[in-house]
Amino acid sequence: MQEKLWHLYAKIWLQTGAQRVDGMSVCLAEDIVYRDPQISAEGVEAFADYITGFQQDYPGCGFRIRQVSHHNDRSLADWDCVTKEGEVLFQGRSFAVVNKQGKFTELNGFYPVEGQDGETPEPGQIL
Image (cartoon, helix red, strand yellow):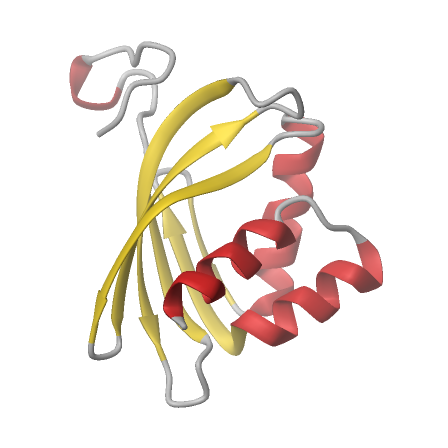
């Protein structure tokens, strides 16, 4: 179940408009809290705005889920950020909390950021 949820979640990063709204309603709680090295967003609308910015900065790029681990209401996914041609730009992990309705209530993304910890990430680097 949680693996399917992660794959649905990955799809919303490629979706726009009503399709994204529908996708988000399936896998995200309205009060979702999203955090990564660049932002902290609360609520579906703020998170949707962040995804729009990602799409503008990385046109055609999305996420491919490699592996999912979970127990109780906690879940961890390893993923690749990929171009539309399938080239891996970078790799990362996301940690999530899932509510009783089977939706993410909290998402925390971890990925290399230039200058973080004094290192410059190499293409395809995983944390």
